[in-house]
Image (cartoon, rainbow, N blue to C red; front, side, top):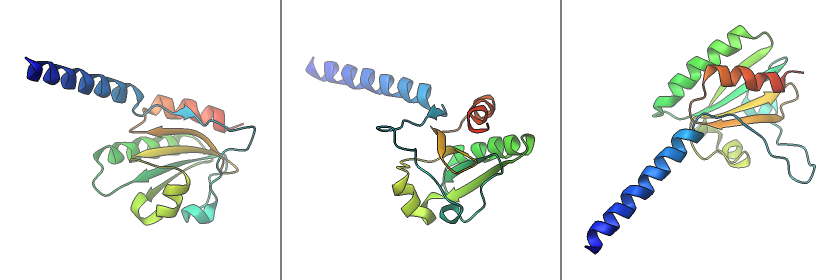
Length: 141
């Protein structure tokens, strides 16, 4: 009987975890500021690429990440649609110092940067195109 209860508890916990993760995946959340200090800033030399004129979509990927391909396509389409927006994709393994500094824990992770390189929004998982466009509305003055 206790084996059945343990199995049921594990099944319930796994289901709850899966539902929460599905709900949070790809959602672009506002960057929380601590005690009025400025959010994290990414400079062109950190990325090895120039910032966009109005905003930058910074994507952290890895070699065997299937959602990274979908994210690359979505961000590429959005950056082509909106003038002054650049899409930069970085290999997380090749930029470990930046990954640690920005607390990137999984791929894909997308950061929406304003024209100064400040992190405005952040998403883990593949974001939806309408959500990316809406997040750019906050980054572009």
